[in-house]
Amino acid sequence: MSNLLPSHLEQSDAVRARFDRIKAREVILQVEHLSKSFVTPKGTTLALDDINFVTHRREFLCIVGPSGCGKSTLVRILAGLEDKSGGAVLLDGKPVDGPGRDRGMVFQGYTLFPWATVKKNVMFGLQINGSDRVTAEREALQWLQLIGLEKFADAYPHQLSGGMKQRVAIVRALANQPRILLMDEPFGALDAQTRCRMQAHLLEIWKKIDITIVFITHDLDEAIFLADRILVLSPHPGRVQELIEVPVSRPRSASQFLSPEFVATKARLETLIHQATAVHLPEDNDDYPIVMRLTDVADNVE
Amino acid sequence: MRQHDWFRVHKPLSRSAKTFLGILSFVLPVVVWSIVSYVPQVWHPQVNITDPGSVDYLQVDMRMDRAGFDQAVREAQAAHQAVPQGHPANPIYLPAPDEVARAFYTSFTMPPQTADGEWLSQSLWHSIQIIFWGFMISSIIGVPLGVLCGTYAAIARISEPFIEFFRYLPAPAFGALAVAILGIYDGPKITIIVIGTLFQQVLIISNTTRNLDIALVEASLTLGARNSQLLWHVVLPGILPDLYRDQRILLGWAWTYLIVAELIGTTSGITWFITQQARYQHFANVYAAIMMIGIIGLGFDMILAAIGRRVFPYDPAGLKAA
Image 1 (cartoon, rainbow over the protein chains, first blue to last red):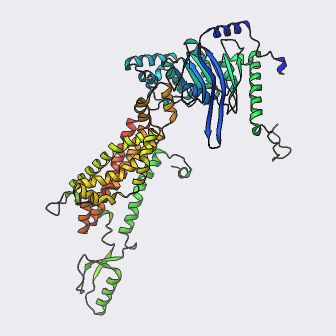
Image 2: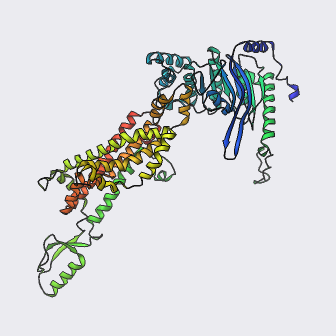
Image 3: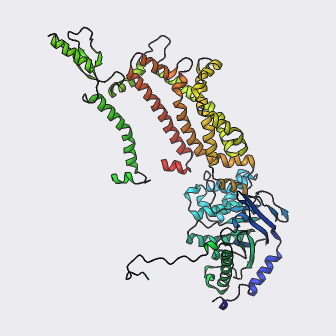
């Protein structure tokens, strides 16, 4: 079937022009020969090996890969939450060391401060970085207005739904005006419907403000729907397998899920991830057994 | 109220069932106590003499074992003399509920039995002060140290092994030492409470601090928070509801050291009252005083719990308990 599809490498003129524009913008994040190894009782494990990529300003980069490819480790190193073992991470050409307000982060587990109201959560980064209360409050309310949650300014996080919590977490990170927003499977804990709405909402936010996004996910549809480019990692150790330029045109909408570009890209991603898994995880790639029948022969469900 | 709901694993109770069972937990022991006290067939191993009859070694209101009384009756009958009368009674150390209930009132109105004695209210107030200062001093050291231990591995490592060792030393063992250093009045008593509370306090609070969701710390790091900001703006507010709950439990802990602490040096406070009353065999007063300790302790805890629910409206554990 895949030979009936166009190649994921074929780009329409509009898409190609867009990529040219992206690449003409300055580089925000530069990752060079990044490696990470963990010391375990069994010896040293290489989690990330010679990772190289760049992102340009206002690019939306997704990182996908099978479990164990170190995509979370990668984004945590970018955020400064974990030390790298080798290589360099440059933000605006300057090496980064430790976490900082120039790299905002959104986690899968919301991580809103339960003791603070929604407004105070958004104010947190501003006040920590020296804004006075009045300014911080005004800005926080503006951010909440942006995502339509100003009514919930004085609510506590436990009173919000998962999707609302994650929207607050996104503006909490954005309020600091970081150069780059790192998102580690931010919609992983949401139900399918909320997830779709959040994806569209995130694109809407991304379009309207000057932010570069690095987004980790294991959901291929999500990656294709959101990304300009997709970085595919292979596991054990995590290596860059391919960097795919998504040929699906913008603005994106749910109707594009069935477009040839979308399907072709997904087919390519699936091939890559299947390869990676087949090579590196043979124990989980065995065929599952045929289950013995435990019902009457006439009692069929199919 | 469907009873079968009460025995489903982890099934929360309805509000009315909670109230009902909560009251029942106090009523049941009182019912058992009443049966033992008021049903003559249950236990009552002694006889309270109402009329000594011809037996010269008996007196009115004297209690003796039933066997001895039966013997005296048989001997009087054999001698054809006036037979002693009496009714079954429990030993003097088990007063009936109504006597203890009355003692709750009378022990407050009873003037001190010695010139230098105290009224019960004064004794209780003295005890509360001992607890307050003991717990306060312990907390002033224990809470910051516990939080620091839970936050910084180095501080934990340099203090916790020794504290682990020290907490096995029974606080009363330091009584004689405390008297030698601090005299016989309140000093050594407060010290015993501090020693009994502090070491547990540091360990419990450091553990609570370590249990803080690390993701919250990481989130604040990515928002630009640094060392002391993390401690004041993330760690402290993050653990505060749990810290408060720990403090309530530890305050209860401090109360359990009260009696032993007050026996050190000159006996004082509620312990003085209890030992005095026991000496005069006023056991109803003794029970009343013991119960008062429980009531004050539980009362404080309930007040603190109510304050906690108000102060920490976001605390999920507090919401569940309410």
